[in-house]
Length: 315
Image 1 (cartoon, rainbow, N blue to C red):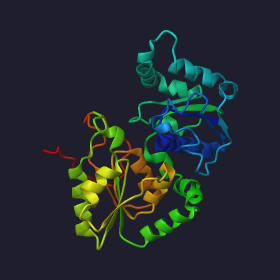
Image 2 (image 1 turned 90 degrees about the vertical axis):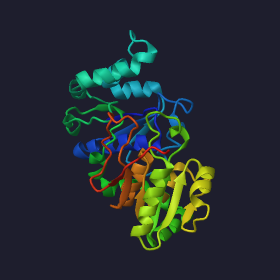
Image 3 (image 1 turned 60 degrees about the vertical axis):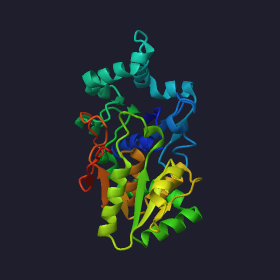
């Protein structure tokens, strides 16, 4: 079996780990179990417990683990080894993440052979991750790279889009988007504003990308998805008949599937953006030329067909 020990992460970061588990499961027809026994809503970014994150999709999972004792039984020695890495007794709490990252960098391949898949270094997915060496594996990490999901494109689209698209209003809107030159614009603000690592995309980037599509497409229509509706209405919709700011009350999973209905994309440096363009099947994507504010930190998420637009500092 493959146990995904869910991280303190939002819906789309969880989808990356699931895609990797699904990739492994296809190799040896293993069962996938999703473990939420170590988390609660107060601990999770975006409150992404199972019901809020992955429950709306038709994922190929054998079980959802919510009881710590059940996890210990099922994860066995691999689970014990992983917990020792994540919560070492002799390491102070504030240093535990850096300790685990150090252990991954030094002992990652050996851990993998012992049934522990650790990928806290999101910018690093070594070759041994493509090998299935032991019958039972416990996964904890990001696996933020296209390579696993791209090998399962049709499977993942069926598991993610089909169950949500059954809802009438979503199906109608996606059909409309497919019939016009629809451009998905994902403007991530919220927890990115003031964040020294993730605050990359600014208004200049989005306006430049939108103007480029206005020049390239005949009658484009921009559907803006954002966690700050009032801001984008004021700065993007006002005076523009070709812009629609999507509704306030859309759930995260609904918004993701709606975004994937567009034909063209202007994405932010966000896993939410990445999954929307992936599920769409579109090869027309404008993306920021850098993913992190720190130029030394690289992302594996870039796709070969993306058009990269420089992100210049606003004056």
